[in-house]
Image 1: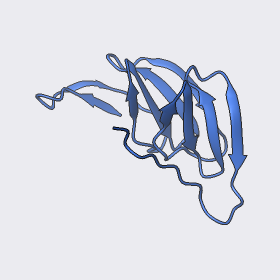
Image 2: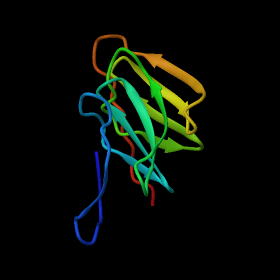
Image 3: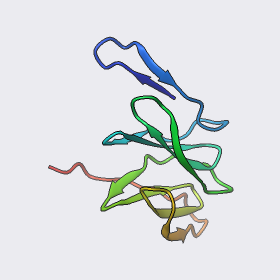
Image 4: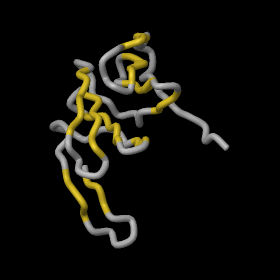
Length: 111
């Protein structure tokens, strides 16, 4: 994962997030949340890329962009739909896939 200067395109920092690619990142305040194909949701300091925490979701990787609402992160790992606290410590709930389709997660822009 790379953080780039928006004006110049120059790299600010680089961080490897798991063995495989993952989700698009979500930036809230000074924290970047990003899933990895190696089965973890990660929180990083936006300015430096330093890790704050990661939450393992074995066995499936996380390819959905995390959505944040009311202090909860919502994401899928193709096996479950998760609601995880933004500090990565508490799973409020998870819903298992029926196996018929991969779970998908989307959001509408708020105005």
